[in-house]
Length: 236
Ligand code: NDP
Image (cartoon, rainbow, N blue to C red; front, side, top):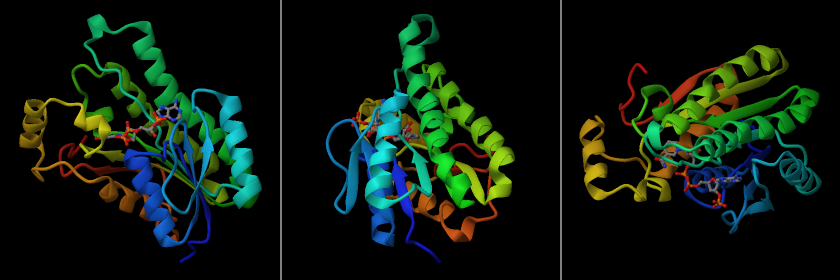
């Protein structure tokens, strides 16, 4: 199995993105991460990028290409939440979440696809969420941005599937990161009651699945939604 490929993970300075980058490094890939602040894990190249800005994404890709070569595996992981009930949700709460979670994936994957087409090989992995298909009160903006990634990956599969490029969605459930640490203890306990596994996952449990879907073993899987949620979203 070839693990000598170039990987770019957006938002690789912390949380799930960092764990994904660490996993690819351990497997021997050449790994770059984008970060707005901080640094990626040891063994990675850190480039600055704001995924809401196409010029910034373009510059980050150029930097990675100059240092490591064309990006062959792209993981669109950078994401934000701005949770509140619909009646209180501002235009900015909605637009900024969609611009980051969905627009960010668009900008990054569009930029990556150029070289993937030339190479006739590529892996696109979009980090969605169980909430995208299950729904969640107070997360209309976030859930909409995450479910849209499914249509994105499936359309991309139809466009580029004949060129050795796969596009898949990984949908984590509740993962122990800064994002979930912000939830009050009582809310965390309530969520755990509904998760068949009875616990939140570690970021590394998501990273293992991402590494597998990007590997040669998963060459015939495209347009799939792979849950990593301890059974929370079954059937959604
Ligand atoms: P964190 O909040 O820990 O990290 C988010 C990452 O995204 C950071 O690296 C952050 O950079 C980056 N980011 C945010 N906005 C931008 C932007 N405009 N441009 C570039 N980078 C940006 O999140 P998690 O690790 O928890 O989540 C990672 C992904 O997984 C997200 O897409 C999230 O929606 C998804 N997810 C998370 C779950 C969880 O339980 N934690 C569950 C399901 C899905 P910076 O440090 O500079 O802010």
